[in-house]
Image (cartoon, rainbow, N blue to C red; front, side, top):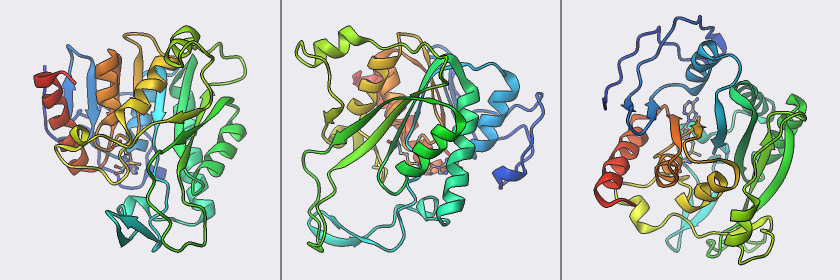
Length: 287
Ligand SMILES: C[S@@+](CC[C@H](N)C(=O)[O-])C[C@H]1O[C@@H](n2cnc3c(N)ncnc32)[C@H](O)[C@@H]1O
């Protein structure tokens, strides 16, 4: 069964800090496909995470993939299509100051930790704007850090100021729920993908392909291939995956490709619409 609407069966609250939910609150998904086990909520992620937690207190997700706001749209410049451009990904990406940003990351990390199954794992992407805060919060909360991956972008835009190295990597932290977790790692598959050698923590992966942007592109879109690798490394077929900052659904497509069940949350209708269109395209063409 599929549906597409934005109606809510709980009170609408704009500030995540003021939300306290009781176990009988149920937000209506913006999209649901029971056959493929996909659900998308168009709403503030803190509301949805709290609702999911009320329903299942002991952890329900095998893996959580998070590409959070990096809070880097603060008047800097970048190079886009060979031209100088202002870095402005949207209001959601504006910094609130170091301490507020850290509070934000600590809050979603804390909810995600509770939502992970005992042996479940978390993947978080980030640049220097965000990754140190996320890494510190992960340690404060008692997750167990398993690896930090360097995602190398083979064709980064040049640094126009010529006063810095050109940024060409992002970090991806892989962490287990806590020190007691016995996380799953598909060592054999990773070794096979690495040509028979142990896979290293530097992953060279190109940005999203043209066909990943046919319905519009998100300013922070991640390549499906990158997320597929995280899924292959740490989950099995039919496992349940959460993306609390889904954007235009790259993790959703990766889950369809790898036959994982999926719940995504995104507050902006524009990105939810693209994600739904990408799914339709997926069904037609099977990529
Ligand atoms: C870095 S982008 C994710 C991009 C995604 N990985 C993709 O490939 O399309 C972060 C997304 O989080 C959303 N977002 C930010 N704060 C949110 C919140 N409190 N609740 C729900 N979504 C939020 C933004 O609208 C944005 O689309």
